[in-house]
Length: 110
Image (cartoon, rainbow, N blue to C red; front, side, top):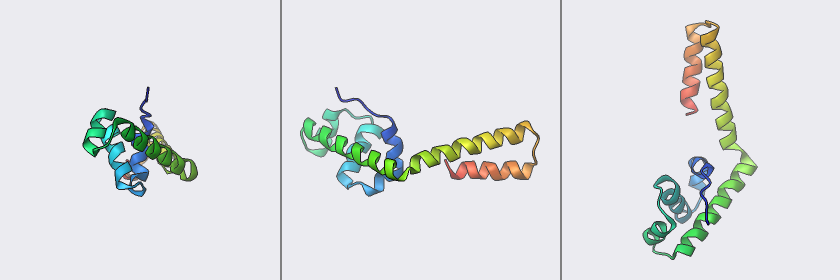
């Protein structure tokens, strides 16, 4: 059985533009639109096995980019630390200006 790696949808946000249109579309259909392999195949005009192969290769490509560049992990870490800093500011009654800057940082990272 072909199981969905839910992390792929997150990686697609970071690296989707470097995929071919065909691979990007296949992943978008499968992960973001929650289509089955049969539905992806029909939408793309290929066999179910063809859809599976395109999705598998696109997943491998995204995982390769993340392994080499680590942008998604850095983004998630920045988001986690910004939230933690904001919680510390609120807990320790830190100035409103500092809290506002952290909130802006948090908005900029998602």
